[in-house]
Image (cartoon, rainbow, N blue to C red; front, side, top):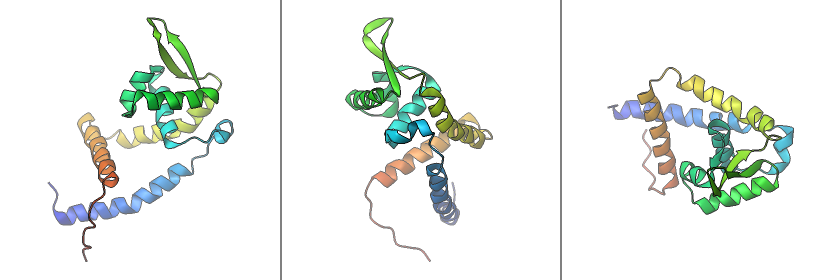
Length: 157
């Protein structure tokens, strides 16, 4: 377990790197085909899952994104109208719909999202699977902590 001083040094480093990281990600060029679509972070998450995992059902997407199936259905409807996603019947259960990236949109989405996936693979490569999970768990705890209002800690120094 780290000492408070070590933790403070790590926090200092992270507070310096996170704005640079976010800034660089925001500057990744959006392919021309996607510029007029007004894509939000929720779209990015869904498109990333479909790109990495292939076609999925609304229920699968909802579970992976941690949102209600109705929320996923709304996003899918929006992106389907824009021609980004396609829906088809599941051959094994005609009541279910399979969601996928449209063939016309796949090259632009791949061009947009692949550099980020490549960068994560590069960054995570030296870590063991257990260390990778600790890293992901840490990011999730950070996300939860910044989403929860807290009292301001007194400054040190």
